[in-house]
Image (cartoon, rainbow, N blue to C red; front, side, top):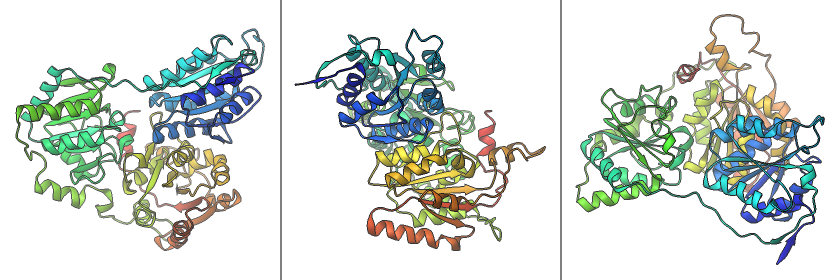
Length: 555
């Protein structure tokens, strides 16, 4: 048996390591130096980010793509405030994550570092926890970690620097393991759902974040009951390979996908909010369509729209119980929506890659759809795709395929631009055997470009596709009247900047310019590693992407 010590800071780091923390990201200062090194001594890998905001979203993406708890390590005061946008995104996405932050001593009322960290954290929806003393350090850390895992929450663990310096020791290792509790639905509700499915002719199942671990059983239920399957954006890829997979439901839906969902007479949301984005402000729900919502959080049911039936239960357990009930009563499988005609329509036109492109390329600007389709064919299929926010975002989200739900990382709950590069780094470390790919705009990429140094330092074979329109394109197309000087910029040679960071950079103005990308891919396949590649794609003006009007309708 070992003993952790000699201070609270050492205990905090080592206990988090023993509890199973997967990876730590941060910027180290005097307040979190000892805690970070204690984490590392406990075997937790550490990635030094260039900015705390980058560290927070790296940890968020890592947690989403690895099913392990990511850690963010921060200095007190300014370290925490720098990280708040990333923490807010994680909190709104219910990412199980620990933000380990130093805090000013309670007595240091006049310290310039002092802010009300508890109030700040709670204001964005995260849980604020604290290490109160040497005597309570073990219980405090365990409580914070348990909350993150079992309640699927982003927890900020505050450790005042005077408390961190207190002598402390804990006999180790600490071995408790926590899992999110799985709620089984009641029998009567399961039978009600079976009845609704049996009475439908065109059922559609839409799975969200809460169903990411239940894809196979939901897919089996869909096959048995003749339902088509679709996902929200965050669960993209969950049903990849099913011939009746419609892809993403919502603003990113192809015309065929949107039409088939809107024609449904029953929509079942599995761990899916069925919010304005996933249902296009209700346009994908027919006037006579019945809506069912399955979720283990009772407060989530009916939060965005009325439902005919709310099922409180784990998605996987619920789908399994519904299958069992169907078998018990001997209900004969029915094709319902899974007809040969629908299968053909899905195969021919549900993917955006199969929708004909009216090429808008010019002499020096490439059509973003033609660009993305060509890159989809060029880049290895075994990839993990991350998406930044902006006018461009629909193109990589819809025209780049992903192998499964662990191949798509979508940090968009807070709709902040500039999180994409951070997301891609965290996702790459969570899925090290896949090619990390990022779709970003010039605005978001330049906002976050310091972390390109991190990607180069880590030796990540990261492909960054910059959809460069020299503007904040969403604002250009949303505000059609008035002066756009505030949101348009001179052309920036992003490829040259990338080379300055030690990455490879290529400028693309036409499909013919993608030869350098193909050469990079050949090198990656031969060596298994490569320097990051930044594709500075000078894209043609699309007049405002097709999903933008839907998105701005909610603003």
